[in-house]
Length: 123
Image (cartoon, rainbow, N blue to C red):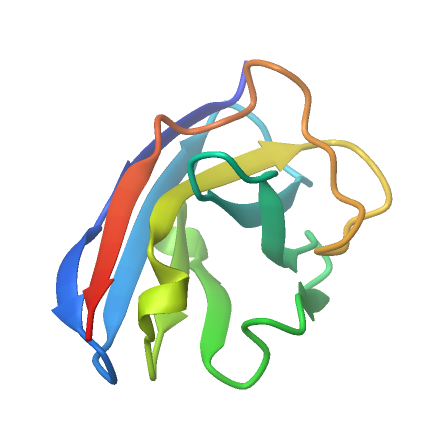
């Protein structure tokens, strides 16, 4: 069973950067991704990384966020630059053997999610 442990959230001023980390264990050849959710709004898929290295981004973060992985550390990252208050949300990592693997359509099953980490961007 896949296990995910996130870290790296926090508070930052507008224009700043943060890097989220997610240690992924228990399975391989996964589609991995990052989602975010603002209270009262639907969860948004923002970035995915397929096991073959293919990446996908939501338009809302394209050019500012980068998804990557360190295979030696079994860790998925989300580098977030040029943050704005609109990026304030709870961020979740997820990993599953499902298709398609793209930011708009990745639907991990229950039990394939991290616990979430809060990102707050102040103006």
